[in-house]
Each structure stands twice: as C-alpha cells, then as structure tokens.
Image (tube, rainbow, N blue to C red; front, side, top):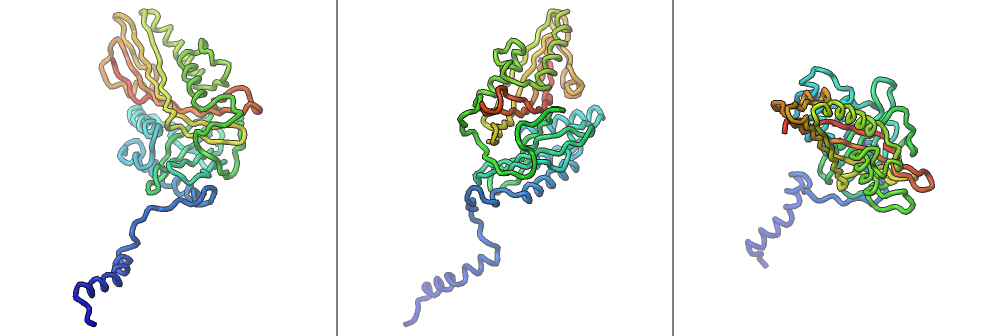
Length: 329
C-alpha cells in the first residue's frame, strides 16, 4: 500500500529529528538535583574553580572596573567592595581588607542539593600581613555562577568555638535546633539592640561582644564630646536582613553570617557643621557641608550561637563594616 505524502513526511521527520537536534547540541533540560549528601551537590573542585574565577576577576578589576563586579560579587560584599574601590581611588591608599588571603584552612560544603546554596571557607592566618577571613560563596540557581557573598574579618587572637580544619559537609538553613541558647533571629535582634543602646542594652551580658561593638562605642563617645560643644546630637539605627542570613548548623552550635545595614545621623547643632568622622567617610562625602550629615553603612557580622551544653554567651567572631553613602542632610 502506498503511503500518503503527508504520512511519509511525518515518518521522515520522526526518524531524522533526533539526529538534527543532536547536531545542534543536546537540548536544554532542567538539571535534576542529585540526592542529598552526595558529592555532586558541591565539591572541592567546584569551590576552587569559583574562587579562582572570582579572585582573578577582582584582581583585574583593580579600583576602577566597577562593571565586572556584579558577575563576581553579590549581597553585602558587592556594596562593600564598590565602596572600598571608590575610597582607594580617591585617597590613593591601598586597603589591606581588599586582599583576600589564601589558601583555605577549612571548607564547609552544603549537604543539601537545593538552591540557593552556599559554600563557606575559612582562610589560613598569614601572620601580620592579612587577617583571617570567613568567606561565603553563593549560587542562586542551577545555571548561575557562584559569587562571593560576604567576607568577614575575624577578630585577632580569638579561638573559634568549632572545628575548623579540612573539608566538611554541613547543613545550611534556619531550621530551629533544640538546645541552643538563642535562635538565630533572637541573637541578631539582641545584637542590633546592643549596637544601638551600648551599655544600656539589656542583652549586654549575653554576648562576647568583640571589636565592632567596642570600636563603635569609642567612636560614638568621641563624637559625643565634639558635638556637645554646639549642643549637637547623633543617632545610629541598625537594620538586620535576617532573610538572607547564611546559617551553618555545626555540632556545637549555629554559625550565623548576617548583613546589618545601618544609618548614622549626626546633627552639629545650630550654627555648627557636621563633618565626616573617618577617612573613608571623607572620601565618599558627596555634598556641601551642612548642619546635619547622614552616613549609611553596610555591616556583615559572624555570630556563633552555642548549644546550652557548650557555652552561655553568643560570640561575635568577626565583622566587616564600610560606609556606602555619606551626604549632608
């Protein structure tokens, strides 16, 4: 029996269409995540490739090529690096915080294969040259590259309250754990209150506060003395972004990396002029001086919340803080 032309054409297409598609490359399909706990979720090779791409890209960017940053950085690190580059270009002074020390002394890979996913790296200490860091790399979707989300500078001389060597697989997420002295949300909320209220905060005794708290209190006291002469005032408000926090579930407690934005308003009083308080603020100051100045900061903090059997205080392990906008207001 003779086949009809249309039927014959359909048969030919059915036979040859797979070959035609193969010649153009495999058709795009949504990847199927492997089972949780398998090495395919994220490997040391994945981590090293991401680091090499990001570090070489940042080196090439120097203090001028801002357009390349969104492909390398995300989250608070993008805002902080942009500000550091502006300050360095303005002052001509190199910023050691922009140099990321390597190699890694500990790597925490995700045990879950869902997205977004994170890889956390603790860098090797390098003597007096560079401070030790906690780096967080994130991948937002299966088809996106990893970016450097945060770079927390550890306080010198501190002892980490968790094992920090080799490569480990850990859970990430905000699942509540029984036995911790506080939830991540509580710990961040208490810390924000501590930064705003200082010694008046009811949560002071719940923390090993660290350098960020001490430095802010000292600078605030210095400015208070200067402002008092003209009956000026100041206020700082902190805004945590708990929804984007990276939470590592470790055997002795939770390591929380959280972005906390802040606004610092300074009023020099009637007839006074509010001025930038630091060299970085001065480099970013973008308007004519007036009675009131508003400085906006991006802060990233690493908190460790111990289990009740391992400790009684929340430890602030390190932080990064950078002004991103300084204007008369």
